[in-house]
Image (cartoon, rainbow, N blue to C red; front, side):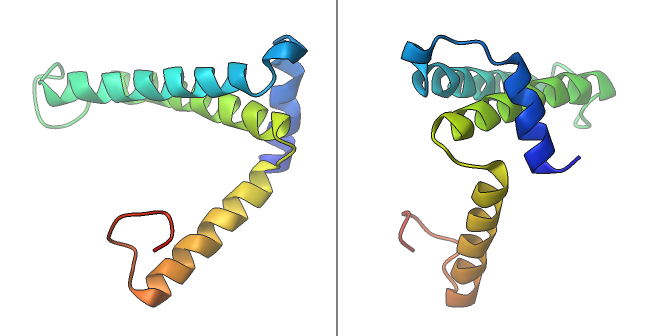
Length: 110
């Protein structure tokens, strides 16, 4: 599925009030990202009885990552941005950092 198609379909299930435009999906994005981190944290503490992540946990994380993607798509729309433009911008930025030798490091303007 193309990012443009995904974003369009995600919006069919977005029903937050106009007065919460931007803030509602931003809060949801943070919440769902935290849920991904929580599942990984529980894996790190040994909930899977070994170093290899269980298929059940991977599936659960997959579901949470889907929620992250949904909120990202809706937030981008609320900001009049497309997922495709965001993805291209990000890859271009990272390629420039690679060329300058600044992939590692700190700060947005490396």
